[in-house]
Length: 329
Image 1: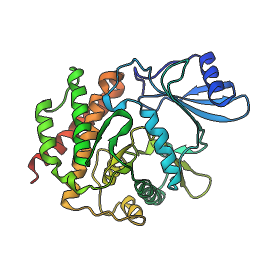
Image 2 (image 1 turned 180 degrees about the horizontal axis):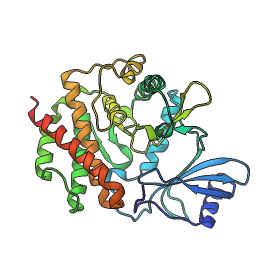
Image 3 (image 1 turned 45 degrees about the horizontal axis):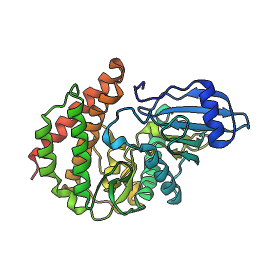
Image 4 (image 1 turned 60 degrees about the vertical axis):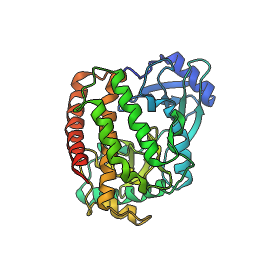
């Protein structure tokens, strides 16, 4: 989707950046438009390699608070994921504070697979891939850290509850900054509701790595034989927190069912119990994600025709989740 945060580079600037990063010039560049924030290109280099370049927005561009230094979190998350046995695109170079362009960039090996959301698969193949995905997410969630939240943006806490309230609080502060963002309830009411419901988060006692953006567009498939997952991409929204939050984006605008193969695959690697308190935590994470989808329009300024359906879905589901949180003990 087009966004004001996506940086525009001409062919000369792209080639110069590729040479600084990996020592080769660009023969051909194709911009990949599916992402929402960072500018992304698939580059054919003059040494025969194909790579993907992700470039952060200009450092002086206003963004949401949690988005500060997102590519640094992605670089760290990719390294942790690969070490845990999760398939990811190989990270070739992470450049921070580039002296010519400013901002950060990542260069990764290009994938030759197919995004899951573009693949035509029967029900059996879909179920098998959901099971496989669950196992990969469980392996990712075995990675533990030292602090909760987003270390690269400073939104952290000594407990998960403290970090979650800092994360949601910063997002609601951003909503105030962008007054044109319509939310279904006043910001003061949202703060109070999330704070009162957050006691359930005290159950989380160890910070785990959470991708928090695993929708089918961020999963590449190898379709050369029996479909399998080639790589999980776009770790930029990752944080350290409750592994239960990993269930939110694979069930975006929906609920998690006990008969979902994703759960079976996850439980084959590590335990996961969906207690009433766990469902309350899931709703807290849904509320956070749906708020992100609404508030991020402020700095990004998506085209109205493209964004309107997403805004309607996010608002509808946010209202549903808030009503449940308010009515829960």
